[in-house]
Image (tube, rainbow, N blue to C red; front, side, top):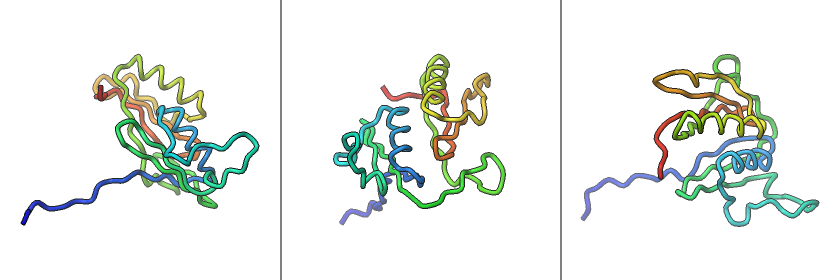
Length: 145
């Protein structure tokens, strides 16, 4: 009998939001990921029952982010305040030039800049809020090829 311990695998990170389709589209555009089959947006003018409940995006590497609709969600008041963040995403880009490109993309998609440490020589990064207010960071760091 194998004595190697068995561990659960992380399936996905789930972000609560009041508009799953809107937030999923933000991250789909920002990350270049695809919807799980069946979660794609319906044709224009058609009802979107999945977008009112639960959606999943997948990367080419198998990483997944899910979006779950909730009726009310207080926006995190990062870095301090009455509604602290419960989770945030850290995203890497390979160079400072890529950080600038992705900064402009993130802002163009509706993100809000919360902190700019792009001039930090040891760990250049920027912190943003997504459309639901969830913080996420863009770092210059290792990037899989």
